[in-house]
Length: 338
Image 1 (cartoon, helix red, strand yellow):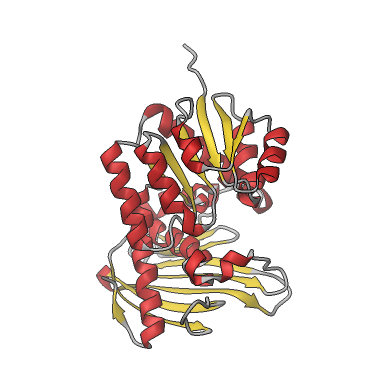
Image 2 (spheres, rainbow, N blue to C red):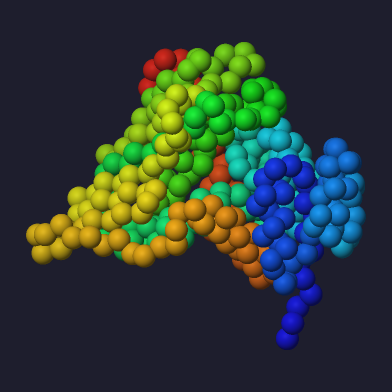
């Protein structure tokens, strides 16, 4: 028996919505974007015409009140994620929130509480969790193929010449942070998720320029101590002065090691180190497919009322770790994670 399509209201018609979210919905037969909201009504109308969306509005309060919207996809600037998300949840809508989810753990906790009270799905848009290579690696680690993972090293260094962040991304008040929040939450989330979301004990971090006032950092480095004597090294930057971006995630266990970008696996078998790398799709397709898989998963969770693989509660936890990293950078010392 066929079901009616899940009706989506999209809030925020900027680049990530146009490049990743809307094309993904357009390829689905069981979901339809029925409304789009943006403060720039000209942009909203252009996007609506391009993607055949019947209604537009400049008010997310108006959109979430419409009865024919089942779920809301939030692609707004960071400072609007929490108010738009709470409004949608209180209106009985399921919600997907683009990364970095919120500006702070406090805002994330408010969203999580609103979802629990409303009995609605709250999903964090951590698209890297939905990459084929990342999901393969997670299964590999969960089966114990690397043994006990005692160290992870992860980073994303973006060239200064190609970073074109909008004005609000450079404002601590609106963005919540700089490279550590923008890039770091993605890298940190994947690393912790691959390791089984271990408890973070303490952190030590530096940032440049040092966080203060309304400025945001362009570069940050952190060392994260995890339960069980494991550790995670993290580095992010918007200001790399090299010929290309650098992104990596390496896991080291007592029975093997794994590297991402591209995926490579080595494990010890009968005393010999062997290649265990599975075949995956070309890396140039991984980004697009990750969003398609993420959006597909969100629609399935809405239809079946199931818990997403990237729940809001886990985004709140990652944000609490990021806040500890900021606190360490500001105070110039190692600090407890809580």
